[in-house]
Each structure stands twice: as structure tokens, then as C-alpha cells.
Length: 114
Length: 117
Image (tube, rainbow over all chains, first blue to last red; front, top):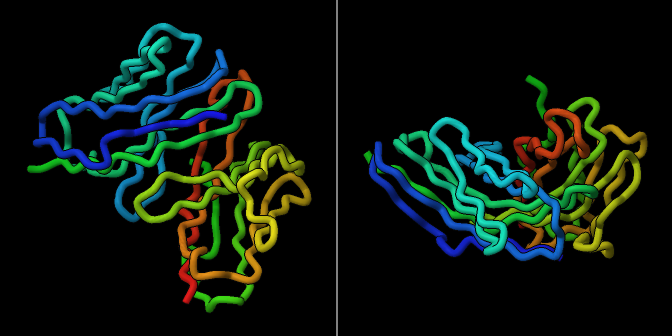
């Protein structure tokens, strides 16, 4: 079984600054995917970024990047140049490679302040 | 852009009543997931389908919940009888699993918010 832990229930950041959200996970699998999903208030969950565990290079999507430390089972999300529209709940998630079984953390509520 | 469709968006019911939620995944997505999300928490997997077969329903309270995906396309999640603790958002997601481009990413619907009185 997989577990995903997000130790920061709430965070805030000033507009245009950088913030890092933490995530740790536990698994016995060697090949899997890790994700960050964003759920804005009263809106649906959307993908922010995905990382394949077999790739050493950290994934990047515009202002969003991850720090993937496989040995430490750590997967943090860095948001650069934070914007008001980044205000949302962010979920770290794990998916097994073959069966597509998914596990989510309990989320971090991020507030971007003007 | 293709979407996962869910209905109803909102449902208010009294305890002991039956309730059903419907999900239509993105065309071609063989894998379909139902999650329950309590306010302020992460989604909890209830059931995962691969085509019409159940892959994982270990967290589905089978005494009152049932799910089906008869033709391997759309799916229905039913609760009978509903209890106060079932109040939550019910999310449907779909995915391709495999090595094709765009695979292994969950696409979520807007959810069905259930309130049990």
C-alpha cells in the first residue's frame, strides 16, 4: 500500500514571490508516477505537473517545478512568481505504473496575498 | 477539450434515502475512478474500473455503496441507504493507463456534492 503525506495544511505567499510545498510518500514500488494537482475554490481538480519516477530530471511546467528525491521519497512543488490565481488547495498524488492505482495526500491550502 | 461529465452537480437527500451519481469519462479512457472527498481532505478512492471490471473496491462500503460500469463506458455510483456521514463531494476521474502519450494522468469531473439531512 502507498501513503502520501503533506505536512503543511496551510501556507501563504505574497504575490510574485516563490513558495515550496512539501510532500513525502511511502511505497515498495520501484516504478510509479507522482503528481501535483490543484483544486481552486469551488472548481474542479486539474493537473499541475507530473513526474515519472524512472526519470532523474525534475519536471518543469512554466512557473511550476518539482524537486524529486527518490531515495528520500520526497516530492516538493515550487511555485515561482506566485499569482493570485494560484490560490487553491494543492494535492500531491501517487500512481502505480502498471495498474494505475492512485493515492492522494490531504492537501495544502495555498493563499496568494496581493 | 474533452471533459469528464458528472451529474447531478448537487444532491440533497434525507438519510435512509437512495441516491445515485453518474459519470461519463473521456472517450477512450479505459480506466475510471470514483473518489469521495470530505471537505478539507484529499480524495479517497472508492472504486477503480478497468473497462467494465472492478480493479479495486477495497475502500467501498459494500453494505450501502455499489458501483457499475456495465458497458465499460459510463458509470453509476449508488448509495442506499444514505447516512449523515456520506455528505461529501463524489469525484469521478478517468485515465489512459500505459505508455501512450497523455497516459497516466487523471482527468477529473466537476464532482457531485451530496448533502444528507
